[in-house]
Image (cartoon, rainbow, N blue to C red):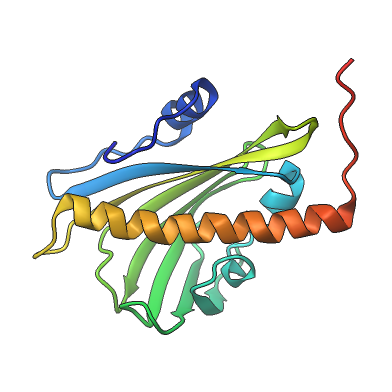
Length: 186
């Protein structure tokens, strides 16, 4: 994987298990990790909503889904100004509520992210004695003509970092309202 941060043992195991991308010569791939101070059920309740990415993705202004929210459903996403795009068409590739895995593929839109696929996994962990969540998002995408692999990876990683930070902020606000109790460590 290109440009990945150093991972702990658990992160590396989850990435090997769930985040297998096989990039071609003209593609880049990476995985990003975020530790969130909120229980996995709260974080997953946001991530799994293929029909409402705007709940935590700051660059999404509107989303309309065609289909029944099952595998193969397609969403039309409107992107807020400031990015080099206004729309994205995305298909739900994987939704596993037991393993907490979401996979999407971009199938159209007025942007340069061709053959983009991402996998997002959500894992329970303990942070400072309280229920927390480890979120991993990985992707593979074509490198557009005129760009390098590093430039492409850097751009996509910046978008994902923004989304993961926002997911953490929203989830942690929900957790405070939920008043999650500490786990006894006896």
